[in-house]
Image (cartoon, rainbow, N blue to C red; front, top):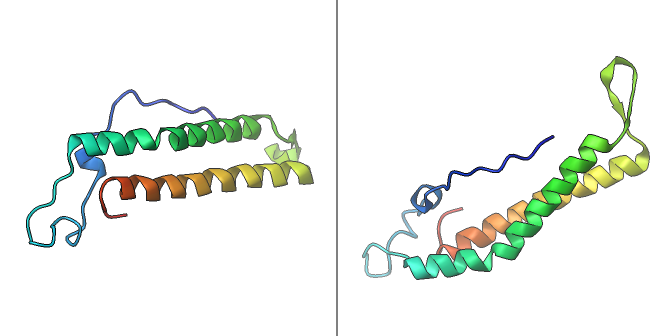
Length: 112
């Protein structure tokens, strides 16, 4: 399993979709997020992004090297390998969910 890096940045406007409740302030005026605030929020997520990438790489590497080939092409995993793979997958999933929540919170209440 190979991880591909995308060299195309995703425009922030495409990523952030404000809910009707979050898109207006208390006076009914359109709410804006300054570039400085967004940049600061994104920088605060750097460590979490790097940790998630690292755990995903470890998971892919383990997936590629685990198990022994069985009859019919299946891969046979020892109990410890199943437990390790389950831990890695659950860890990546948990980190992804936490990062998603932090990202939307950092974007000033953007919709999840």
